[in-house]
Image (cartoon, rainbow, N blue to C red):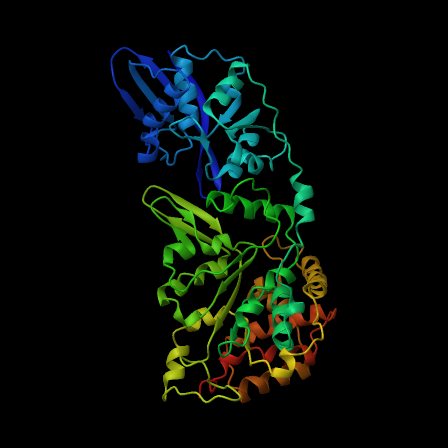
Length: 513
């Protein structure tokens, strides 16, 4: 006899429907075909133990399990439950009242028949609705994630017996309905870290506000203990709220990576990822023999914070160059090629030198001649070229630390950022792939960032006197456009240009002496 059920496989952030066919025939042995990896092949032992636990038998005949299409590699343990249901059907141990072919069936079985959660449920649920399936049967811990998708019956089961009872018609399981959109909108502003708790550093807050308003990458340079990390952690709180399409895309990536946890719903807040400087190339950009998203994709629509930037391996930093420009990363392997979104805002911090006290107002730098320049050279010119704002962070004075005056809150800063982003949305409404000033092409900079004669004179003098490099020109214009947006100005004025020029510290040829 032959029985058929449907499962799914995830490639990149998209899912593919997999047909599971089980045939019982003459002979002996268990055979699994269809390019299955070790975790899938081991399902025989889990399925057999689970069936025995609930009083069913594994057929002692020739059992062939086919996972189609056969040329797509299958990995993971999500095929346990559909194989078990299929095996019972084709051995006449399960007479279904509900048609198994109307549902996508997923789940890893433990030896006692309890279902364990799996990864990548959200893209699978989206594909199931797209392909016209009635519903999805899956572990209870994954049900909230699948319930994000409307018009799809989400059947949460805790054991193999629950799934068998559902298809036999002896157990009624109501589809799970979660008002994810209500949860999404009510938790959008739940940020623990707020700028009102930061005393002083008003110039740094201003720079980070500009960075958030225009989607600009930024780097903070300052001595240890000056507040660089503390400031960076508060940036997600001043970014515009996630839109529903952005939240769905972000949730898909975290689902594929298995980062959502139990009873997860839509990601409602912008991600903040802060990998340690010992991270490998693959962990940062994604990859592996079976490609998984890396930190830059997990930071999609949010912030990637690289603390102590020069301590990262040179090769790790260099692999970011292309994703920073293209806002996505393509990973190619011999048998597959996948693409992960990587539209993130890079925020980096670093000490000015190995000892940390170069340019410190009170402490002397003990680094030898040429050491400071050597330390800065750990960051390549092409990478630095992609960072729009260079901000020097100075230590906070005792009077500022001990002050009881409340600083401006993240909510107040966020309101200004949202208004500036709305101006940009209107400006780029005819450009599908561009929605912030930082994403402008050189041609668009020439058309949009028009400066008056006095501004040209100022910019010329700045480049000559401060020794600014040519690569700083476009960056200054983009940042000045954002400053003008924050000021609700249609034109880029001299004061906007002047402020933008001061955020190019590392482009000064004499910065490191």
